[in-house]
Amino acid sequence: MPAPVLAPLTVKDLDEVAVIENVSFTAPWPTSAYTTELTTNRLARYVGARMSGTLVGFGGIWLMVDEAHVTTMAVLPANRRSGVATVLLLELLQEARRGGARVATLDVRVSNVDAQRLYLAFGFIEVGRRIRYYDDNGEDALVMTTAELESPAQLAIEAALRARVQERFGHE
Image 1 (cartoon, one colour):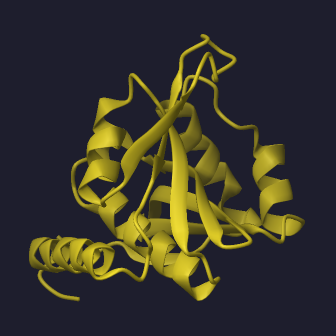
Image 2: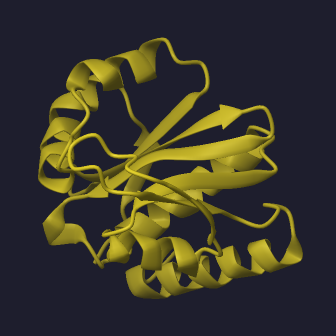
């Protein structure tokens, strides 16, 4: 299987983003929100993953002072558990470093165990809970954060994940 091709998201990608968003989330962001993120939010960085020319996943961060906040990550159901999310998150954390972030944080639904597994594999740990955070159903959000992005432990975690992905896709 060829490795996903990563590139910054653009407004031209938003029809494909909407498809992934709608099959991935119970309260999807509208296309207008992504348009704003891509055209006016100077803190936002979004990357997409394509396989055979089709957008199969995307993720984004906001770079705020010395913190990168993962705003969203989604992969088409047919491409889940294939390494796409790992490739995306590896790239987002590299983008966080390039942007001067010291740590990365995120919020995740307490029911989203698959996402939590991914984040735990990246060294994110639970540091709090936002009670009734999600408007659609009142579900709580777990607040998770990494160690210092430049710490030997964090770099080792990401190196191991990068090696696993390279093995899966057969090349760098």
